[in-house]
Length: 427
Image (cartoon, rainbow, N blue to C red; front, side, top):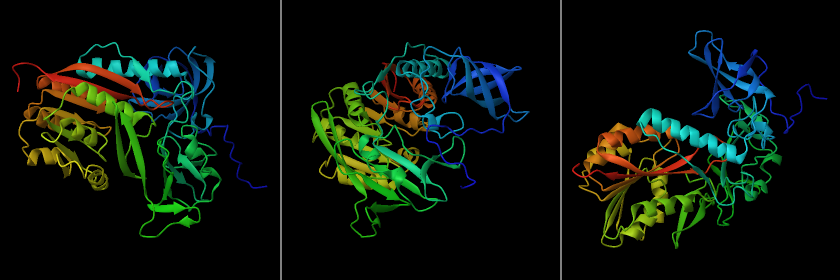
């Protein structure tokens, strides 16, 4: 028998080198944890719920640090929102990516709503009753089977898994319950892969065949596919607002990972903008063209869409996706730099879908200088969004509406679509 302990997929590995402390758990905080105190020091606790009494293992407790981190490993008094974990391997000491798997779906929505509301109040000085909406079908699937794209790492033995939370250590897995059925059927965790490699998998909700990329190389049934025409991208189909849109996107490129996200977000953005016929629209952080293509159709031949994206590969995908839309101008480069270098003149509307760090003051200022009547901001980080809302307010743009969507069940992430209009007399 090997001296190495066999991997049990139903048991989350624990870091057993930290001391145990008893904690009374307080409110949720941004980042997937709750706030507690131990001998006057703030402790951010994962795998807990507000109001619980837990025994937690300290995972980051430098004596002079302003706060500590901990994992709840024993529940002495449970919250009514606690359920058996939907993904034990993402529990205490386990992999990242499923930190709310112990919370009921309704509880997850209240958790995320509380975080969004707190960030809006603290950073944007806006008090809003936030409601987080579930994507269609997620309740029936119990919050599982929604990811059409996943990334895995392999360990030195070639076993596929994910990295432990806040670590580079790869934990081998036997399943990934957030992935769609099409991905589950690939048998990724039964295969012997190259050691220390990154595996990207894309299985579009529209039914296109899945694609696997290992270490940047397309992978077929017999291993690496080094042919010049090896399939490395997938066809994505998006039906929204009575229209159908078709895209081709690199399998290891960026695309919304929830099976329903592209349609929901396109519908929300178009509904927020209203009639765009003949309009000039800026599409910032435009990626592979998810919004660019619907915007081009909405503005018509007399309008214009200027799309700006920093990732060269995403821009290559976008060029294929919008090649028939002559009203689209694609610019590749950091959004802040391109906006500073190009005037573009006044625009009627701006759509932006920045990365998790948000847009920032310079981009917000550049947007306001072009005097759009309406701005639609798609953001996956409540803190960055709230900060940028404050910047927009400084420039005369008020928050008109905010829709929060749970496009990342079992995780602390939440997608928001915020709509802004320009106050009269500004610009």
